[in-house]
Image 1 (cartoon, helix red, strand yellow):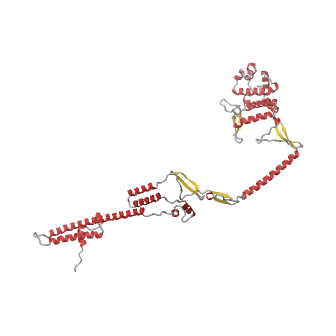
Image 2: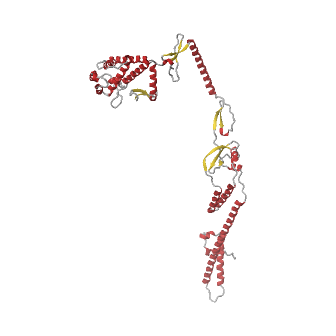
Image 3: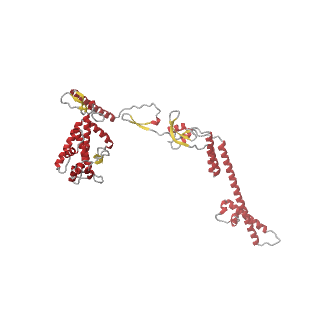
Length: 509
């Protein structure tokens, strides 16, 4: 029984079997079978030609060799023709794609474009709540329609995107540059700021280098929310949404009402106390009089106490008659000198390094009087010599600094005490006599030294009383001078040196 001859199997001997590689992989299965059939037909034609009559005898081998050679040539010719067909098809596809691209580019620039409406742009804006909302409606109201240049720039940008998607980067860049030239990116100047539109609604705008001010699409003013207390209820009020003219009922909270009642009660108590004192004042029949200390309300009825008239600074108000006499003014100066000398007596004694000397038994600083008040025998002898006794004599030169300070304060105290009595220059003998009377001497016992110190305090008190209101003026002047050096009232006390007098004093910090 005859069977159909498979030319493809015969053709495999020219094209090779198995999995195609190289350029053959570009051909389809049908194309590769066609190459095999063309090779087989060429080989068959060569065999038929060799089987005819010939002047030269042709052997079987020669016939088969010519057939194989013809089949191989037929295969190569068919293979070359197939690849040429592939190249031609590829070029036709590229030409078709280029024509379609050109058509699409032409449609971008020739067909009219309808830009999105402000509402559509607002709905498409990302980062906002989905769907129609009040925020998107406000955004749509602030979106301005595009200009002709912006529409044209958008067309060139679409063309650039299309070319870039087709792998034509150079052309895409040229179109994008043209889009940027038509609608250059404006340079921002400063920070966004808040204004109101024609309806009075606040909006955010941005100024550009060209001077244009444009609305910032998708952005609005920051909400300024305040809490308003409305009688026990706290309401959050958006100040940015206010248009003006709104009214809010302002009442007190329960705690404020309670505090008000407490304050009213305290006021009533204070008013009652004021009325009571007023009745007491009326019963005492107080009269404003001038006392040595200053103005005061003095009762005319028995049993009442005088009430000083105080200033805002907390001092008693002085009257016209509070002006001191000449003797009081001089006595005030002498009393001040005596007190200053006493402060020097009581100030801490210091060593050569300037540090206070501490008593090892008590742990407290040793005063100048304790260290130098009682003179030694050599100092007493030198002071007894008339030419060496005073501070300008030899005795002063032979004494150390602490003793010199103490001696100067002694003489200052004595002259301040004697001047109101004698009114003349104090002699050497009188000076030494007063120093012996009031200050420690070489042979004095501790009780005698303490008795002399009390005598000095009593003498100072008598001089202060003699000064009367004049001494208060000196105290005020000293307080005003020392005010910049005043330290806080609470803290740890420490010794400081007054730069004006050189006296050490305890102050708290």
